[in-house]
Amino acid sequence: MKWTALRAILKHLRDILLLPLPVTCLIPLAVYRYTPEYIPDFLPVKIMGLVLFSLGVMLFCWSLFLFEKKGRGTLAPWSPKEKLITTGPYRFCRNPMTGGILLILVAEGLFFRSAPILIWAALFFILNFLFCKFREEPYLEKKFGATYQHYKSKVPGWWPKI
Figure: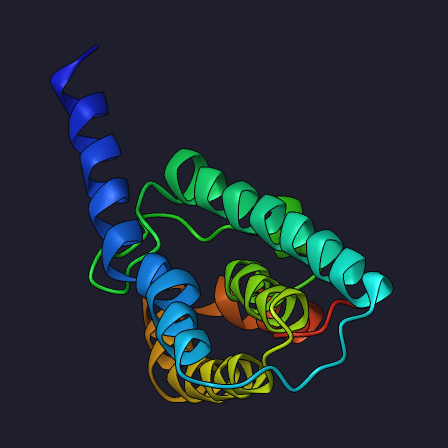
């Protein structure tokens, strides 16, 4: 394996350990350990949680793959992408990786019957919405100019058009 490939893998691992791991594992675990279960224990709720978790992981991994292959960067804001990604799930929504993480959080809230994890999911969404609106989008408009503005006018930010 070439040094550049190993370096890219290590950067991705670092950024996963710093961002999605705490958001999807450490914080929900802390919240779950110290709160009662509020959601009734119904098998369909657990199945829905497993389905949403699977979809979220697939969406996250697909987006992560595109960040490396197409964007030539990692998921972290401090690792700017060289190219604008408009393929794969980015054809339908500008923030599919965050959507994948949100699906994982909702799935955890349902599966573990934890309303506080669902509240964390809502807070996570609000924080990401504000970050994208006031930090990421202005940066992308500056970096990619008319290309990003055209993409932004055609593709919704959070909820895919069906």
